[in-house]
Image 1 (cartoon, rainbow, N blue to C red):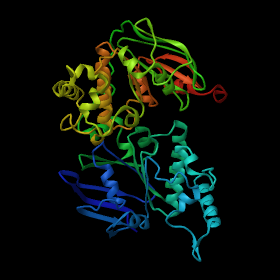
Image 2 (cartoon, helix red, strand yellow):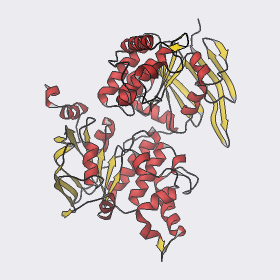
Image 3 (cartoon, rainbow, N blue to C red):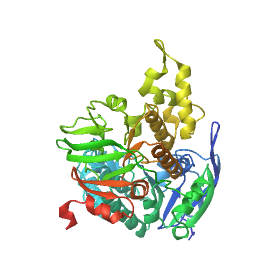
Image 4 (cartoon, rainbow, N blue to C red):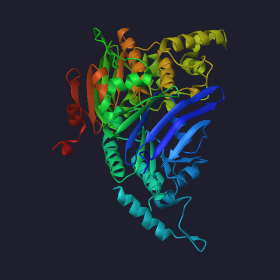
Length: 498
């Protein structure tokens, strides 16, 4: 029996003008969880698409159980036992769970689908992974976490030997992530080999047995998970030592820039009060559904509060819209940058200058020269990786898209920037760059209110931390000496704390 269930060696893939994979390699043992990591653009997605039959390699060899294979297409990959669980479930929301699990390989007898057998087999598969989901439920009515369990059951229905999990916890709460961890370990113990792609160190160090790093399409190395730590893994991924991954500097705090008193929105949050001073990063956290995003949207005029007051530099203000907020010096970087922060087909140039076209006007017309000067200056300052500011936002990596959204806010010279999950879905190199930008902003006297679910980020980048639970503020802490356990205890409903 071969030592490796899967061996991929000397894999090369060339797209027009781009060497996506350059002599890359990877191996996978039966019954192991092997993390494949790297920055955005490192080649992970292309590598997985080669294995899944989406892209034919331009060079190299793939061995399954010691035998060379040529994977023709995704259906052939599935027949060979390779299944992919994507970050965004590739399901049919209007169909039932059983229909989704067996679509494409239904139980057919005498020309008719045997739905009774399909529902019974779907129930068996769901039970095998501990998923309490009815086969007759409509998939679109399920949470993201439960849709992922349906995807796992779908993979098991075709007897997958290799399960590829692409950012499986990106949209999950901590509790949902822990439940998925338990199911993933159970699959490993039952003999399924799992390739894990994740930007989250909690996933990598909590699940993986080994880790392989790609950088710029090249193979960097493979290590047992106990041979590397956070710092060493970051160094391998970005090609340099990031000595201070969280570069938060202590700066003298200035005057109070933002104060919120008794803010309420019926059905979402109640009696929320907080403050942010010049040069201060204030963290805001809580479990999914606690009301964090709803609070910052109300502060910045994206939604309307029913009660409460907002003060900027000590003066009460009425913030009726995001444009009104920007005019008062209050900028919002939304959680979903693609849906709410960017016009993806538009260029970097037009996205950045959209909030302040008045400044780019010459007489009655827009000045392309002024637009370019402003957007190119911010591109250089934030180190946005693109050929020029005319590149479409949709062509950028997640981290660089996030930088464009930050650039939009800086273009209007804000006093306070509200960052809702600022590093969600971005790679470690981009995270470090965003943290550096945050530090530069507070050094210039800007105040930052940061909503975050990532504990290392929250504890290392904040000066103070507010915790929400069930739509109310449950605690306020100084960040120095604060522990994850203290935050989680404050975030839990009282019934669960007991």
